[in-house]
Image (cartoon, rainbow, N blue to C red; front, side, top):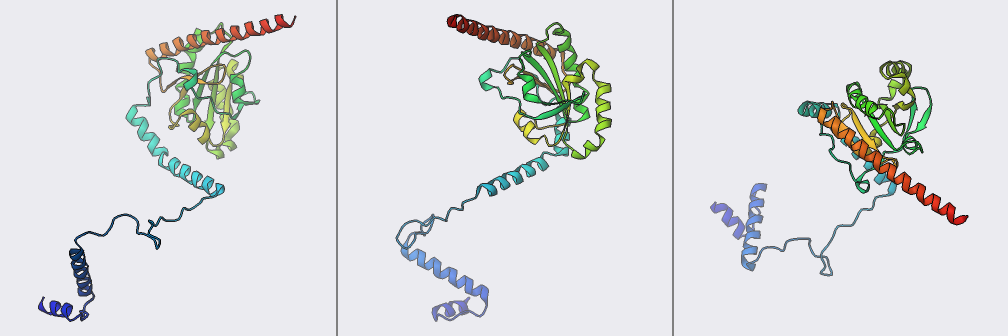
Length: 284
């Protein structure tokens, strides 16, 4: 200790680097104590007295898109098989309870646009099927894995029985295969779908291969192990949803909301027809 004090007093460099650090620190402490104030916080001032701010790094549109794709891939990895399996196990395949009321049109999202091939071999733009003239309400049933596919009939059958005499109420079912290599087994998958779905529904049942990321994002779906059903109005908006195996109460909610949506669509169609008739009468 005495030797260090002498070294400092004579301004002699201590022989060991660690002692040098201690000396420098003590000098800094004495300097601060003599001024009576700590060093200013925040960015250091520049030569003209203004605070120095780091330069802004501009990212090109292509680079921003690349970074966005990377972020999505990381999110997909994070929300992969084990995440989905854990979520299903925690909720016992019931990610959420079915809606009890219709979502207002202003708050409802539209079904994303995508192509899909029916079990009869005809490719359709799916969104156009939802807005066809003869359609007023559609029950859209989606599955991404076999575990989800197996529960969809529990939703579809009560809907068909309730609205068997109303052609405007239809069921559209889509099975997604996001593993592209499965397209090599397309023939086998089609045959399996045909044997599981009633023949009269083959024209309204679809099989789609390819990425489902944007479709799931647009429909608020983050788990591919369960099945989903949506009531979609004539404009393609998703007004009601359910998932997993339905309870009796959920079936009742679906049918009630489907009736309400049919009545709403009928009023809109009648109002539009009345406006058209008035225009034609004025012309004559």
